[in-house]
Amino acid sequence: SKITMNNKKIFKRGFTLIELLVVVAIIGLLATVVVAALNNARNKGGDAGVQTNLRSVSNGAELFFVNNTNSYLPSGGSTFTIATCPAYNVAGTNMLSRDKNISGAIAQAVSNGGNNGSSCYNSANVWAVAVGLKTSATTSWCVDSTGAARQVASAPGSAINASTFICN
Image (tube, rainbow, N blue to C red; front, top):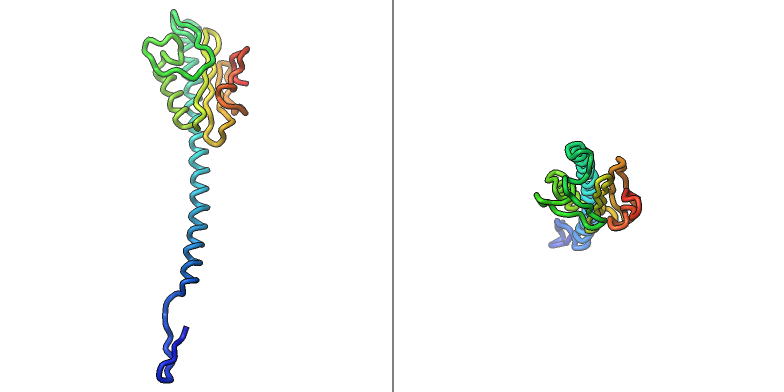
């Protein structure tokens, strides 16, 4: 804008309030887009963490099987029916709680996943572990003794088949 004073034109420098508000609005819009993209990347990273940790569970289970006379249960152990995965216990009666590496990998997978928790099954011949994914409350990553490692379109509590005890 210009101001006339004693027949001289004087130009006032600066931004108008409207110009400043437009700039602030654009910055806010860009920040919203960036934050949404970061949240999406964080969720996908959590899902990748679940998959990686459950791969470790699968590898550890096969080592456990070989070291325990071709059984997924420790000597004198008992079946762990489909339920929330157990925590580590040096005196645990199943592979999932007795083996510190397996138990730790499951705990880390649950930490990386969403708020859907976990579901596990362990008998002498079969095991399965499902952990909820971060990107969707209705999907899980499931691994089992058949070598399956896949996404299941259900929460962890329903991801393990109740009659075959492997991933649905």
